[in-house]
Length: 145
Image (cartoon, rainbow, N blue to C red):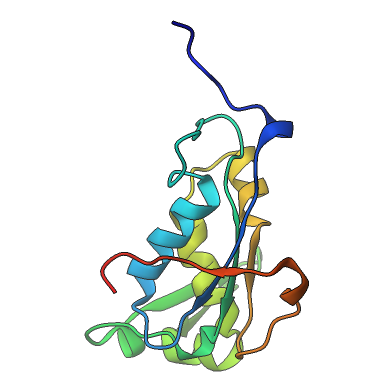
């Protein structure tokens, strides 16, 4: 029996929508990362992008456990000496709420060309509205909810 491999032109892409209101950041990010990679499908192939599109709404209302709002830090560096800038999770949610979830999902993908292509299928919006109604996104079945 021959082993079947998915080919890029034969992949059936679906659109899913996720409401992040009250969801725990890491647990939601793992399920989104698996959907973007296509690991929930039977035709999953590691070297082919078999994943689906994911639209996340209400990213500004994401939840975390413990004291992460004050203790979790986001760092960036300008490249110049002394150019390290840091923000807490609370400050980051106030300034760029979509980047908190994007960075969490990006950290759960492999570091290669394929993961950068898979990350482009993630659409995150801070509020409850999104411009992807024409794609008729279905609710993403989340485990443990």
